Image 1: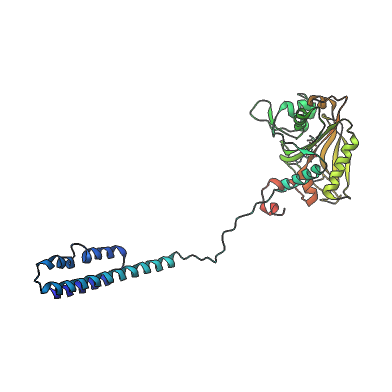
Image 2: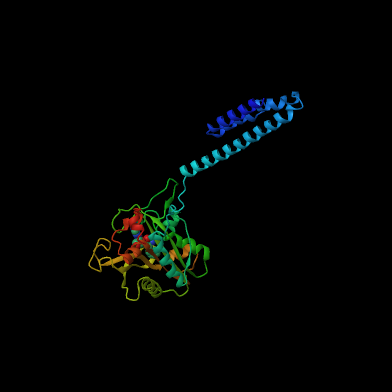
Length: 341
Ligand code: FA5
């Protein structure tokens, strides 16, 4: 029986040397140390041996068991180590590699321009008022003294919606009525920034969507001088003391008298270009004294109150400031343009 135990030990240790993975190792454990293993059968037979043989065989059987268990545990550790080494090699993590950069967003140039103009007006005591981009015909035109079929409607090439009487606002002026109706008979100093839409022939100076800032002041002693002073001051706040501006007589049904407000064209330096329509002056907005009918529609008594209003194109202001020679850059979504601001 002692030689049988020697064989058991030898075979077990030999078999263990060929084991290369965890599954075969478990198979080996069941075969050599499991309940039905030859070694365990030796233990089962110990009771049947003589008094003399039993301690000798028992001791040897225990030795073999410990030897197999120790070899099993060494092999198991070795396999785990080599599996770890393999995974470290194949799933190697280079902690010195730079991470993936997150692109940092920035404000759109049209928004930057809007913010600059809003800040200047805020410094002059104007409050920001928001009004919606889709308006009824009444607000876009009717309440601004343009009843149906009024020829001045032709100046606003409007996008109509599938909802009767609702269109995208072609200017921010309908907001004047909303502010007046909310605050009458209190005095008003408000600006209304926002996007406008026109079915427009696109050119270096015209887009189908553009931002305007509506300016509205209503009170008891407001004059044309206040309008001219406020807009001239805006130009100086944005461009410095030496900025040249001019007012040209014009016509809007919702103001009387009316004017266009121009900045000197810094894009061509006054020589004439596609943006200033070869005049040397860049039209920034329309303005005038609020028409008595509009004041009345807003809830103010025109015998007591007067007011001025203006609608300024903020992309045009940005174009003048940064010498941008085509308005189409604003919405073309070209990063080479957008990243410059
Ligand atoms: C108006 O929209 C009037 N509502 C302005 C106004 C308000 C007058 C209050 C009196 C009182 P106008 O159509 O001229 O006016 O547009 C005003 C400004 O918006 C223009 O001077 C220009 O700077 C800008 N603008 C108008 N159309 C476009 C366009 N298609 N693309 C880019 N900017 C435009």
